[in-house]
Length: 436
Image (cartoon, rainbow, N blue to C red):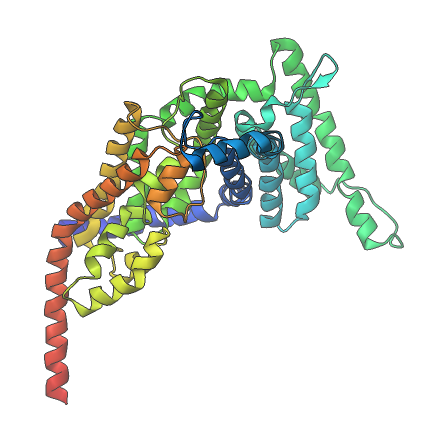
């Protein structure tokens, strides 16, 4: 008779896993994911520029290194801020192009014209003219949702025109390259006749823009995305998929990333305005406080594995310890294995859940600076926490403390599983001795 855990695993594999895999491969979702992957390096470099321009020292410090850093900051300010503005404050423009490019490629269409068309449509919708000048405030994080919708709209509109066989028909003598370049003419006209008039109508009838209306509509969801309940639910869902052998971050993070990036952009805008940072949950909060050492906080398990009495577990620990420092946890997750292993179901989910709750509350009480920058997700967690907090020395201490907590959570489950592995190894050794 199947145990409760076996029935649960069978149910998840039969019902949840197929849906998650379909979501991962769904063209629009994968295009959003891949589109943000293209954009993130600009934000990371922009974050490091920000760190250079705002040293983690008091401006009146007597520390020689701090004084030198501030002197460099004052000298480089005009040059550095220009790059920072065109990285962080042009994220929506980049996103409109990258998502359209990846969606067109998924449909096996020409991706570059799709990217240009999306950028054109975004400029028409998101840059109203005021006093003879183009308003570009929606180029930043507050235009992200508009960029996503516009990228999808322009690609799907182009597909519809192709399906209806509405295109420019040229003589066969026209070179292929010329004919393909002219194929975008009809979609351009379609955008000018559909989306652009609608944008003008909204501006004249409501006194606002489509991006602002979208932001007003999304405001409750953005607020909810920063709640403790939302982060706990997301942690649970992500790691439940990991338990089934599916990369939960890959499936779900692509849906949540627009909210997290908008939160970070709002924090950065508040910092520049001298206001309190409004949001806690951002991409970097997830990377350096919740899943340090990869999803599940498995760096904690790696420390236990390298000292295991089981030869198998010890070898997995030696293989997986260094990658886990850089947030690559697959050698441990699949090597132990933790996938569909009831012994690790509880720590795999509740270690990151504990990280989320503790880190959220500490930042909510403003005991540590909230996150407003980005660092590569492969940055070791304590270092990454220090960087993205703008140099708060307590941030890496919190990160290290959470890793220690995860070790405590994993330890009893690890010891029970270790005994099972040792028993199997002893049986195998005995059988091998008898055969020899």
